[in-house]
Length: 356
Image (cartoon, rainbow, N blue to C red):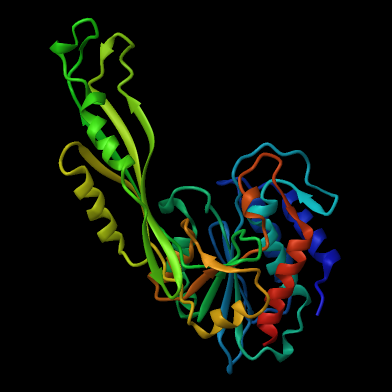
């Protein structure tokens, strides 16, 4: 088997030439919908906002797979989409239009007549923003067929590595309160920054906690990622100091348990408000289709230490993994690019999976 390299390259370039920064995915969604509607699909395309569900093929004697990718990109500085020296350069080339190109090329070129199972393609909007605004959530809620798939493969950039599960993520705003005073007479006030000093030291001293699930080791970590004071002036004792605490947790823990750990860490010393709650997902390494994918030539099998939308499928009881041809290190970069050779290889790995 060999990848249809020209079609893959042209499709990736076509995708990158259609700008789709988060919140502006409609033009690309329209174009992908028109292109795939020309295929002999098992059923009409279902559209939800700027996201589409494509019932590519339906069979009675095999598993139901879903290939899943987001249409949006971050807002970066890029010139015109182009191919140079074996690389595609353009916003989203790696994250994750390379994955979208593989999905489209597989739909258009693979001989599905001998495929006994079912395959659904999902293209969705607003992945690069807050959990609550991600359009995959409403798509999964509105499309009951997706809750019945046997395995969902999210084509996030992973350098053709199979990344299992994902860590959960809690963002919390921790606000310390004090009392203002002139900085020449600090004893008349109560410095909110000084109040936070012990808490900051405690968070800094927390060691990563390793957790082994199915031979995959995840790390639970807690980090302060931003800090700001009340901004009243450089000669005023601050009465407010606000921290963002990000707690990343292994799939052994529920979202509720993760929130409780943050509460126990703050221990009533400051005001606490949770601002973004994203659940973790188990690796499912022993799942038969995951094991089959692992044997199809992936470059490595590893944890997904960050959060991805596999967790949304996990909430529905659906096994999901991360696997994509984009270069992880290129995601969100200025002048983003990706290796075309990796895209060709990613196609061949998924072609082997559906061929078996």
